Image (cartoon, rainbow, N blue to C red; front, side):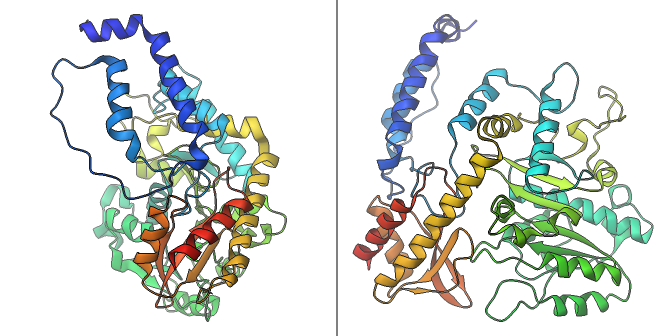
Length: 455
């Protein structure tokens, strides 16, 4: 055994303790860590030949790289839609690495059964039905891709072909209809060979990002009975707008379509009595995307996909070989997602759900929604700042006087907060997304003061 490896094996308890102590210091200072200032450049070094051992690598990381890491796991990183890691989720993630299970199959380990249990817990939490099966994937992009791949196979089934066996040429053109699809849907359609142009934007309601259901009905009627795929939004990125799922589902009485719901973070509205009506009908969708490293606050990367047609899912993703078990009964996970070898992402989610339950995560949703509303209310005290949309859930979208990139840079370089830019209805804007378990209304006040100084 390599000398450094042998030494580290002998010294592993002390090395893990040193790493734990360092991680504890990082986490203890996270609330006041500069959130995302422009980092200094790091001079690259050559590939090590002999290596410095774990202790040496830890020291080098602390010196060269850690100072430039963002405080993205902290309470005022409000860019994109970014969660953190609850204490239980962090514990689960550490144990994920320690056990290092490959959840590609069910042989020789209970890890796959743990994933199944976690998926069933999440299914119940989001109000889905017992016919929804699911699996863990890396994020909303892969969850949307998986759902759309199953939808593509469904469209083939309606036309008497199998895309998984015969390819896209046998299927022909299938439109994907959506009001305000997330960019990951475009990416998924490109990867799936359906093409970005297969996404047909449908008119949205005036001043909204929610689809106009009457316009959707017209687009479906134009198909003259041929199948289509509908991507509905349960929470858009800019304004957390929700399509009317019940109204869309009612169109099934006349038109054949697969309903995929992108509920990446909006699905968590199910945990709020005040907002649960926004996801009414989610349990009748054919496939559903939910991201977990957002509002569930588990470490990157983690999401879940659900579908009511696991048979089609296996048809698409099956991975057969002489050295793999045959597909019988409950399929191995290598037959369900694009991955074969898979990290046990479910363990962090299992830990946080086991530790805090539905009530604990509902409290996180309620508190972060309150912080978003606090920011929305206090923005009125800033001259020239204008809310561009009601604060529907956990995202605040607003315009500022002056140059948006300049304001964003000033806020980021203050170390107080991190926001991201967007464009809404043609207007450059800023958006703040609240989903971190540490965030409170006092953090919204600090963001307001950082903006006041930046304007």
